[in-house]
Length: 443
Image (cartoon, rainbow, N blue to C red; front, side, top):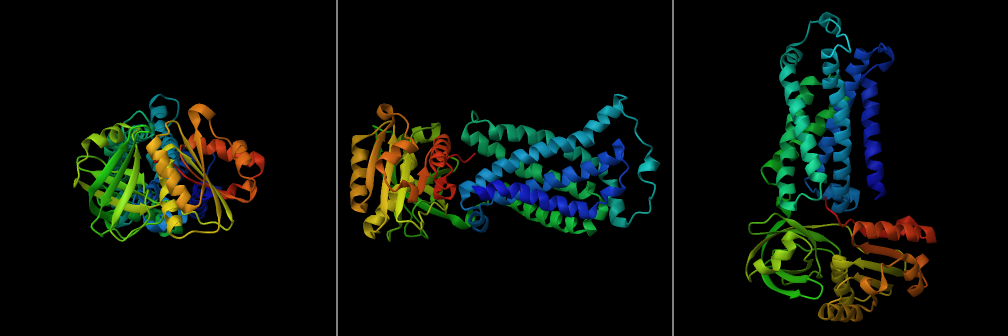
């Protein structure tokens, strides 16, 4: 998570340094319009740089996932870059369009055109760019209004997931409008400076990502066709146990990873892999019926139904330098741990592991399955019924695990639960680097 926190300020700082090297701000006249000119350029460059990185993150590239320590972290960075770019775009709009409104209201006196562009001896390319200024401004303005709408939809949890995905695809089109806007309206001299090279590379990569997104090509290299092999629904805790047969096409996965599953007529949804890698190409999932899609899935499934699998993703890999681990599963977060338990059942390790499974609806049959798996893996299982025992806290864990301070903590569950546990463990003295977690929310 620390990589995400540092990524935005570091990347913005780099862009700022390069921009300052290209723009001699010491010679700027400290009056409104000269300041407005450089502020418009600076905010525009920051905004398009952030948007370009957002487009690249949307490609789900393994190289970026590795740098950010998981696709879930990439998505969180994607979200915060989106919010940052919106704020910067609003500032950019104020300097560009807001100024024109203030001139129209008589609050500002617009300088003469000759004062702004005294030197009209432009190169051929620069002349072409200047001839397209009004069109680029038009596209940028309406692209900005559409951007606000799309980001509001993205952040609104009341918008259903399919609608969110369908509208989110329009971001690629809006981005391409901003690319044209940037190329035409960026100060021409910047393109001969390092800032121009960096921005040029970013918008080239971002445009490539946008085109792939518009044509539905994201993740193509990681997609495998499978079919429903069997499924069972645990009524008590509303969990669907689903096995998909890939016909041995599956390239393999590690415990703790997840994939996107696309059923006929549905949008892809992310689910943790609940089984260890095997030779027959079958992959198992445990899917909690908590949303519209997952609630109706059990009624819509049939044996041999086609399923498109994309992945695997994630770095929730249980790697540790300590001899003690604490696993905490919130609800269906248990799916991230069952594959590792299967792996430990086949190849036991000397590490002492305590698993706390927190659930509101402990289904007898499902709990028996988890118990048997924990016994085979030689893991200490602690069932925590939140309806009877309340929410699990770090102090409660402390009572069961004497060596907690020398343990690595692995958590998968709701984000609010994760934040509370991190805070509690921090107050007790656990090093932050020892708390590993999968971000449960993907938007």
